Length: 241
Image (tube, rainbow, N blue to C red; front, side, top):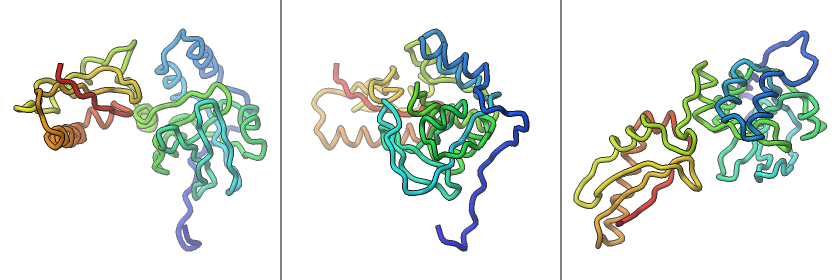
């Protein structure tokens, strides 16, 4: 960025009575989620109405911030920090309270913002997710949830209770065309990604033929609005069984 380029403003809110403590409903949702008593969607629902804190830090700092391998990656034009997720994507760190910010970086300046405005800040910078309370009980808020927060819409997860929700599975199956090389398509929860698309191929395909099927399927999935809006990450599984 040059000195002549306009600087982005942090979407922030003024909370005149804010004492820096955590929003009660968000804190409760986080406790229940960490104990396995509530889904991540409850945390996202609480974020829609909660005040969070966005840390602003000086450039040039570098720090490992949590057990998930998240690391401070870069400083945006605003001084808002991006953290790098394990898959290489960038995310915006947000915190529930001042103590959590200081525990992460005692030189960070906390900027209050509603959850939806924090989501918009991440989207404006081109970052894929929110990282809530980095360095503590870190919670990753995935890209579709961030988009939903920013748009003021409820988040509808693609995976609920260990299964792909019916409308997402149906959209994936409908997006991929079967042919003489591809017998069937299904969607299941992923191992490395959120959703795995299972492709059952005919036996005896050559490597170039398999590659052609994979490229075609990837292009078809990329055109699906449901895949783009509802699924955080995809992996392909190939099978001839």
